[in-house]
Image (cartoon, rainbow, N blue to C red; front, side, top):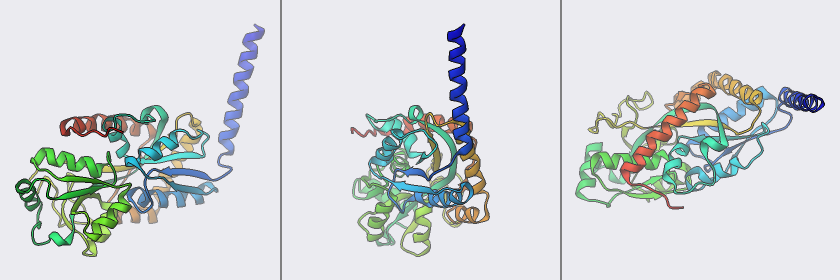
Length: 324
């Protein structure tokens, strides 16, 4: 009986300590590890949210960028961090793709992380460099040229395993075309070479391409979502442009390191949702052609499982694999 009472006392003390920790949180700056270089699509949504959290939670929310290997280097780093409520992971749909694309991963998305909420859903847009303006005026032009000239055109991505990569692989499978893949360490470095004409085309996120399109520096051919986007209302969807059934959307989300106290995770979820309800963040999301997320952790968990299954089939059908 004494042993049982001692065990109960220890458990009660531990629970009390955890509750006190959660109640006092946050007492120091919080780190959101973004596994892509600065200037990419993830940054577009992570930094405004972090700024709002710094205000509402009374402690700085800092973005730490660490690109490489389609976001898997940063994810592995985040998985090793303490689940103390001060380390968070700002990842993307790309990490559900990596689960089947990479032969080996030093972490597991479902094993090492716990979903908090989705920050934004964003369509990709098929863009080409203006040097192709006379040859590639429509998506049909791109398909016809790529069929007649296999592997003559290259496409850039934010890294192997990102939707920039797999959305093109799905496109190639559905259209019978051949394009050469050039992976980068993030959307930022990709955009530099795309604007310089070193890359012919990309299925890039709306968040990073829309400004360049409006400036006339890139030519949009199609939107990858099922419906047109209000930011580019005159650009047809891939389905409208001649590829029935094609649909891809990028999304960005926040994960907790597995083992983070549930009370802290719930408080972070509520703080992020409140941030996305502010007028200035709504404006930013609207300008990027993005739909706000805000789904509860349990709903995001279902989304993650569904996306892992969906992209595993795309990877298998495309024969894509990264032998790291």
